[in-house]
Length: 181
Image (cartoon, rainbow, N blue to C red; front, top):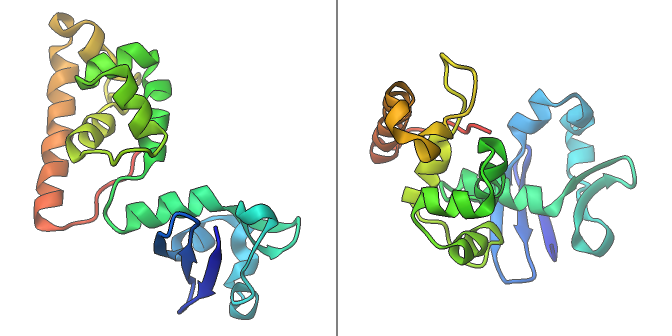
């Protein structure tokens, strides 16, 4: 991170070394996270500054800070784009090895690494598959069966297809996209 500018209530403009600039709204994080509750004080919030080596956003040094990469990911998702943290966590959350995850997505291992490391933008189709890999409501476990044992998982497949179709409708009509982790 190379620059920060406090904007309106709980919003910041962030600048990064690659020339990218983002606006991020921290209202939900501040409201929902006890550790960030001191930032409800607008005077303290306005004191945001870049921390050590541009890797953090600091308010109170060594006490109250946020990681620059987490802020960037939040800003990217708030801008209705696809943050790389989702694809970084997906193989782990589904219990798939990197090779299995790439095969499940229909891409090469190298391309998955490009997406994961932020070297290439993540297509929405890949993102939607990652969102569908959340725990099944009825089984309480991840839907990795869809990818590893498709003939035994009709119920899981139907559940995931319903989630994906709901997301596609949400994208088309502009509603907020649910964020599952």
